[in-house]
Length: 82
Image 1 (spheres, rainbow, N blue to C red):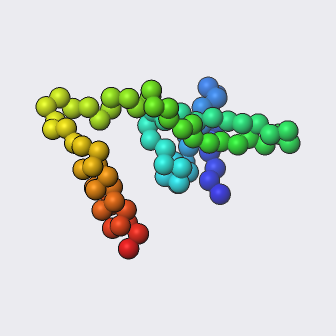
Image 2: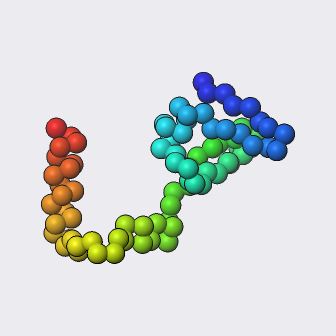
């Protein structure tokens, strides 16, 4: 079990084990959902396309075709699941 302490400003540091388990990075959004039983569920908010649009753009980078992308993805998937 991971524990955290609430500061006087209402802030909590998410323990590293929890951040790692959820794949959280600096700047990620999280939400708290309160159940009818008074328990809080904490979960990462999934990103929308608009949040990540343009992040991979680098001026001067060579374009890659869909076929090239598919080939690389297939190679990576095969290597991952061997």
